[in-house]
Length: 413
Ligand code: GDP
Image (cartoon, rainbow, N blue to C red):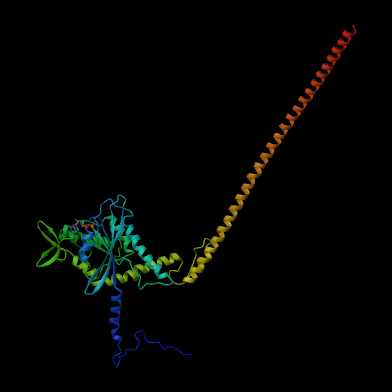
């Protein structure tokens, strides 16, 4: 029997004596990816008027034309799509903004529309993956790669509403917490606030997206603006105040540039990759367990009502067979139940009919008796009438004879 020779993981390293051409592989890879185009899906959540639109416009130096929102809107999500080009590379951006977050008296589920949206995109991708003829290469991937979570620059601590939302979102998406309107808080207050937030994140075990380097800078504090002025011949985004100008892209004024570099320059691919390998994978595993797959390897479960150990299938065919078997059993049980219910109804109806029949028979007998007694009375009356009539006729006859004898006597005289 032929045996295959296995090499060490790295194999033997050979250098081609002349050019073979596979050194173009990275270029081929880049060309393929460039043809496919790049997608980046960002979500943004924060209270109304915290500065979401201004920040997003500043980040991508564009106008997403988000319509203004009031505080009385039901929480929901809104999307804007744009293709941003740079150096011949097109980036298809989808921005999903939570609207009405925190505007309700009962804020229990105020983050839910965004969480549901994140889940819905995972579900769509999973459904595509499970298709027999899946088209993942041309699939429009709308899974959220990063979620910008804007917190108010209160200077004190995290709002409980934000903490609840963060706990939920961290499990589903790369969350980047950002302190909004950093120009409204002093430098020392900001440093203390950042420290407090870091402590709160750690105390609550929040797994936020954050590069390892210089963790003291996080969470980043940013300034956004939709206003531009020309300074030194260059058009820059600023916020103008009577006492001076805050430049959005000035490192001394805010962490805006750090955020933009993190999102678009240094960690865009990391965010996209971790969305697939960490968050989607987590979602997929949960859903497959829901669908009846074993979480890892074949094992037995004691989920049956009688405590019997049952094999948990691993392959799709086994899952299908098991589901089919369970479905057939369920249908058989339902059919039996329906038959029993039907027989019970038939018996009930038969009982009712028998009762009605008995009542009708009783009524008929009663009527017959009444009829008979009436008949007897009428017969007796008829007999009495016949007797009266005979007596009257006899009397008439006697009178007639008497008259006749009187008449013959008169003639004889
Ligand atoms: P959204 O409702 O969260 O989208 O908030 P907007 O971006 O529409 O901003 C609401 C208001 O806050 C506007 O008047 C903005 O000019 C202002 N604003 C936005 N960003 C900042 C900021 O960084 N600093 C300050 N001071 N104001 C800001």
